[in-house]
Image 1 (spheres, rainbow, N blue to C red):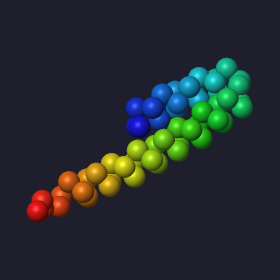
Image 2: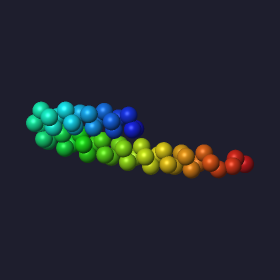
Image 3: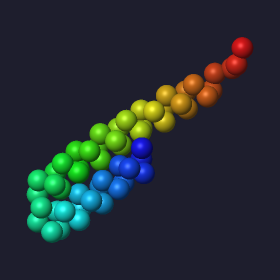
Image 4: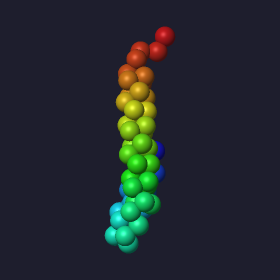
Length: 54
């Protein structure tokens, strides 16, 4: 997820440089959503991995 967030961030920056504001804004929003989802999944997996197995 973090990889895809980085890809969309690069797309957003490139579109912003080229003056494509709509595409840039959309790509930035997608990157933000993917980053947050990836971060939440990473925290959940980290917490689950620290439990003792029964």
